Image (tube, rainbow, N blue to C red; front, side, top):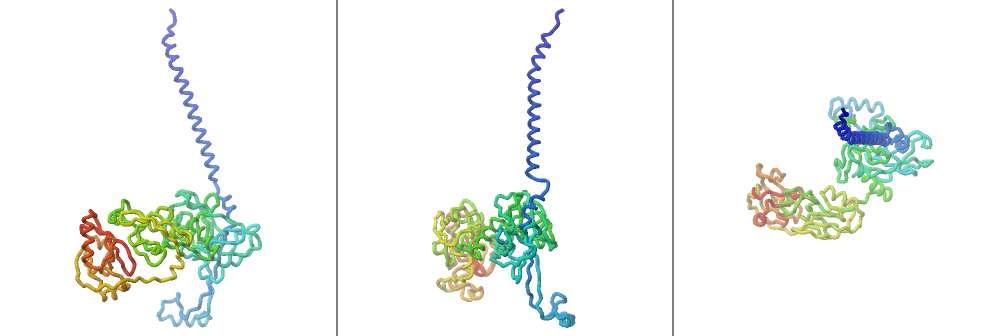
Length: 500
């Protein structure tokens, strides 16, 4: 018999392409595996196992700062026994006997800093050197570094950002570090903090960027949060990225016991560099000043004003200054400043502060349902803060009639109420004499004694005018009415639901 080969031949022929495909797949998988290995090698090369090379590179520019302050002696033994204690005379006699009575004494404190130029400019925190009578800079030990501490003088300070610039005269060029771009730092990036924690001398700690754009207390705050260990004495020290660039100045910690719990804050370098440049050039800061009081635009305020979305900064008052000269009005919403969109009040404050004094800028505002562009020449904030303004206006005859509207009991502002509430002369409006505690007005913080000066962005002097504004808003299909309210002279806008 002839061998049966047809079936096997067919089978063999059918399997051949599959075998080839299997080989290609194996080769592809092998290639992918090799690529993954190479990628891991590249990552390992990009992120070294040790931070020692980085520490060696930047540590010569990190300094310890010692400040000395002369403290006047006190007559009593404060800090030993409570004032008025029966033991007070005994301890006072003990202090006097040992020559510690009213004699001035010297108090020392420690901090950190870093050199930013070979000719001896040093950055630290303002609170490190504030009120110091003497400042000494101790350099990281090494070749080419000053062996002995050097006296430093203060070039300038900025309490708003807690930054200070110092200067030493060194016998040789100093090692220094450069600032990096803090805006490109991402949450999760590795960072290294250096300084003089708890007076222990030069120290390095590592961590990551935990959060960005933290705000603690000031108008110009832009803090990087990190879990790199920061303790007392680290204040003023640098926060480095992996390229050895300073992206923050270690300033504060959040701690229940004074020690690091992994929540530290460094002022972002893009804020610090602007401050340092001004301190270096002028010895002081020179921030732009627009001259308005502002508040954030909430969703209900936006609806009451007919805006599509809650954005921008709502102007609550326009005292004498650049904004008033340019025609800005209370009730305007600033949408754009010098070509950049305004997201909220914090953003506007920083935008204005970072702009050159005397510069003419375009300001786009939302006013009465449409946008307008105004040209404002900025003043200087520091000059404005030294001056006090006064409001002027016409006097309105008192009207003691009361009425309940929108959860509020209001009456016309009388002379007696004006005196009791310290209302500036010339301020017209309705005084709130009572607030329904179940109302939206109470929830939004309105209280007896507040003064309503505008409703629907129109000035008020009578109850009838407030009733007219309510009717007009309802006829226009508004769900809420915007009120301008003043308390102790400070204005703010509040939108109240018309269903009240």
